[in-house]
Amino acid sequence: MERDVPLYTISIAAKLAGVHPQTLRIYEREKLISPNRTKGGTRLYSDEDIKKVRLIQELTQKERVNLAGVKIIISLKGEISELEALKVEMEKKIVQIEKEVEREIERIKRSFRNELVLMPKSFIVKR
Image (cartoon, rainbow, N blue to C red; front, side, top):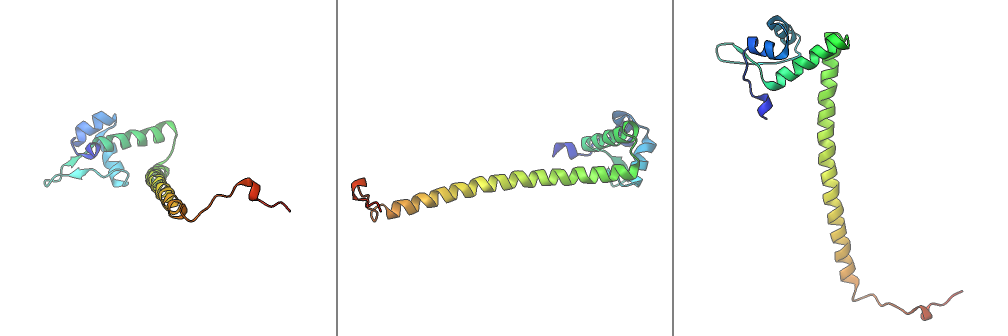
């Protein structure tokens, strides 16, 4: 995914996210974000990291959630995303299975056509 490509050094990432570079270090220490590192140890942030920092800022500044609460929220958001993806996958499988069942029903109907004889209504005996 292109949004996960590490592109920005800490100073650029901080400007893009509207925070101080030290804030990014704190978020990393708290395991809220995980920037990639070059062989030399330079932190590189992706667009996804920037998006996450903005979310953290919104939760802490506007909603007054502490960092422990932010961790839980981010974790739950990740689980929701995984479940939504699983739901879409399951819906596709259901459609596929429904089509297979319809084809099998038609196959069975065709196999019995020669054996079934339709009787006129006048042959039906009422009791």
